[in-house]
Length: 556
Image 1 (cartoon, helix red, strand yellow):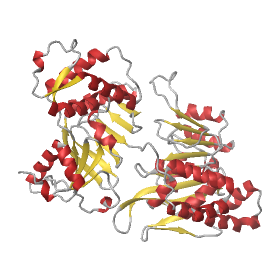
Image 2 (tube, rainbow, N blue to C red):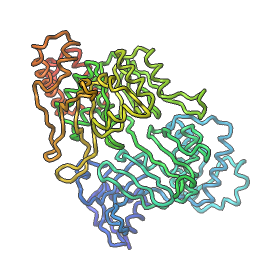
Image 3 (cartoon, rainbow, N blue to C red):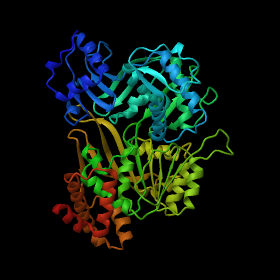
Image 4 (cartoon, rainbow, N blue to C red):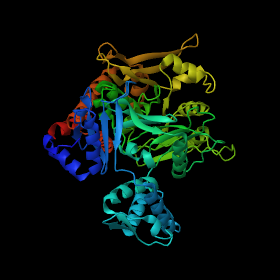
């Protein structure tokens, strides 16, 4: 069909279609199947996320667009996540460019940092490529290893630059996904389609079929970037991609029946602040104000939940409440925590397959105890390091960690049995257990919510761990239940004592809780959202006092 631009009222969309011929070609094919014209936006906006049947194209890079397509011919129930990008150049052109680049780059030391690597390859292309007004026969250009410049037909120039940069400086076909800030997970399930989890539109299918060989080639190429060997001898790998995303790989058809599979968990370069967490309804103002007081008092906290429940996001948001002048040590298998504190030591395990040269979480926790931190943050407690974490709590080093458990009973069972084996008498060293989950709200929409915040009180005479839920979530109303004054045992047993206050002053803590809640509400009203801005605001609040800071916010 002939694509009629005059029927499009969006001037921005028309300009993009004129500028990007491949976008026009895609739309002609799409509408040729009887589908309606999609909406267009340079970025995904709040109003788009509310669309029940999104038919939307948005930009994720200068030459890359994403189409959320509900008008798929597939009957599997999935909407599609379609990548619209420049056409891939013919194989002959890409191979010739590869050989010329290999000759020029042979003596260069490629930068580790992805932006510098991109700039290096981009500079090479700018110096080497010459626009030609007619098609080029590359078989007649001679030996590519001796060519200083080579011509490329003008209309193919942008296509070559896009795909060559993706291949040589980026992560290949993963680049568009990693450029999209709206994604949470990217799944390569083996031979077949890829799937992604979109922050606004849930699980979507990518209508591109990957073969077993294509996946293996991609993964082996990526392994050079994240610096870990992957092979049939070492088929399971956790690593970090150049953009900070975390990748888990299971390599080879012998253990993954459909071929190599990989799951990428995306992390924003700037984490979500606790105010942004509040805007999504994960917690309410009183819960966050309560945790602010507890972390300021040096309480130990486990953030618990199942996979993809948002544990790490919540943990990073809460770090704004750790005083700015405290020393913090983070310990992880794969680095993903980002803290705003200047006095922050970040450490990661090393698995070489050799016990003598490997460094475990257990090793790093023991080292952290000699570094005199005010807080130790553990990415996830799974095994023997749990014993060291509880030993740290006993010696006065508060610990914040994530843990896989859906409730207090499973938490205690997992901690007290193999492979962690924490004696129940040690449990009271953990002050707080927060449980978070992905649940359905009353409208049937899947949301993340803190389901309960529990205070651990001690051990009963019959050897059971005693705890009280200070906050819990009501599924029927999507609200938080809090009993108010007198509901927190830690206020009396820990916070009053740390502040040198008496039991009769308990009411002052609840007044302060309300005041902090108002401050958080006012920060949201004033749109203090950025992770580092929130940290600086809380630090400033601690310096001048709660009432004075609230007054400042009112005057802004």
